[in-house]
Image 1 (cartoon, rainbow, N blue to C red):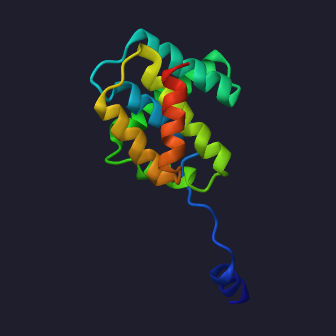
Image 2 (cartoon, helix red, strand yellow):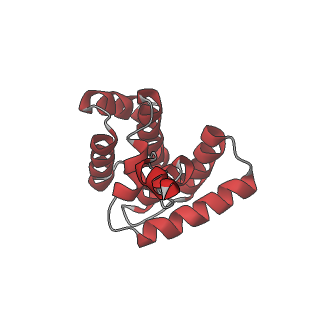
Length: 143
């Protein structure tokens, strides 16, 4: 009985279905690359390179991550499952995620209004200010 009570009042364990940061970021990047209906070669290359560099992965790991992220994105009904864990990250990490999104947006030198809308929604969900989002957009546009 004591064990049952101890388990009841113990600190909750993280949910088994809570997505890890790499997969959540990858799913958002996969989604934004495809949001305008076309995933260009430049977007695919940029996406893979960003994941490789940001998370220090090798090509095999990046391929598996993109495959799983694509599957998760196709199953998703909204961004919450991807952003809920990301909102708990340090501010710098959250800002870096928005920077990564903008880098994929501008990989093909085009900026579709749906891409703008997605970055705005993700920034709001993970707690990145409008000011910071706009600064990052301008930096990545001119990079």
